Amino acid sequence: MRHLRPLPQASTVLALLLASTLALPGHAQAPAGKGASTDGTMLLTIFMKHDQGKTLEEINAHLDRTGFRKSFPPPGVEVVSWYVMMGVGQVVTVRLPPEKLREVNLAFEKGAWGAFRTEFYPTYDYRAIWEKARSASP
Image 1 (cartoon, rainbow, N blue to C red):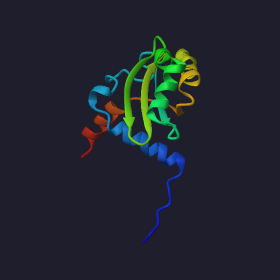
Image 2 (tube, rainbow, N blue to C red):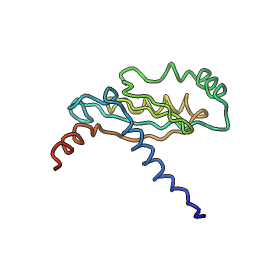
Image 3 (cartoon, rainbow, N blue to C red):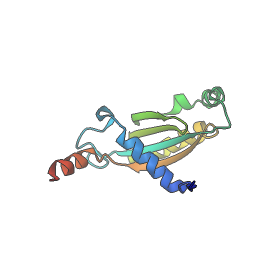
């Protein structure tokens, strides 16, 4: 029997990001033309990996105690999608003006850390480009 080596962490994250992006239904995508630069906003995808040393009740108690649910998203930040990835955690994509980036970061530092390990990825809506390329392919 052949033993498979685990993927390096960066490859795993990219695979999860790709899988979550491909799984998004059409209504979770930004409207065509409403990308990272056309309206002065940017998209940010946030991986919230569960601390598996804690139960769901402990994680929820932490979020309640820190006020995370009240502080996130900050005013002026739109949640575009929020998915649960079983066994991993949650993946949130937000749209925000670049000047709100610090507020998003502080909301996580003050409220989500301790319940989740977080990773942040600047994101853009590729769907319209993909659809155009797909329709142009022979």
